[in-house]
Image (cartoon, rainbow, N blue to C red; front, side):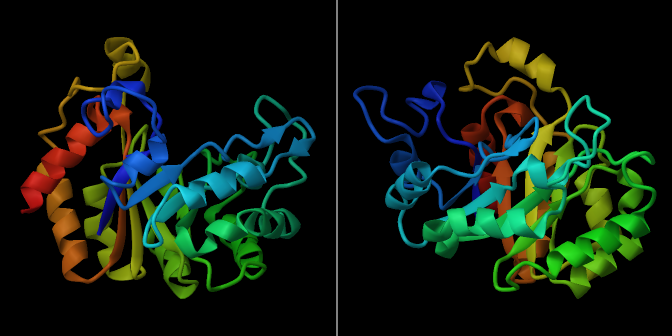
Length: 276
């Protein structure tokens, strides 16, 4: 199991995982504490009729700042996962584009040995954007065939009604990781896990995000150094889920967001203490 956070540059983590004085490389210091992190900054890539790729300077910096055995889980550009640009009725020409995904992979080539999972996060796909789960599977199957099979990928789906046997069988047949999202309007991940645990691949991602982003941001006031909304009612079941996955020798990536309880490092401490 690898456990880390969603992003890493937070001044309010000084004194928790960062030095509380002087200048330092945030990612380098972070990698002394954790062995994985989620990159989400490349997700926001679609701007009108353009799709932006990672800058070589950032890719090189992330590689140089982390040890050889460090792993990144990367949220893929929304230019690949949006059927339409936000607030637009014009189809997105880059949606599941074979050309764009291979350009993206080429752009992060220095990091490929450190890729844990490339995560494709889809918005809620209503009937106007995707007629059915069958259509989604057909489109992603064609897209999957254009990607180097040695590169691990995962799907985060945000349609609760897509979480059925047909979907998980498709993932297993194509060696695609399921990305469990705890938060927003998705069902509790332990319920989904118990229903489909026999159809999971050898790699799984769990993202703990929480259900009240605006509320917790207001309470935190950009200070992410304390537990604000404890999830002690649901964490024990999630920890049992983690133990089960570990017992199966799953390549498990656990990504914790500040918005889950108020401080990702403190949530990680709680989980680690419960696993020992």
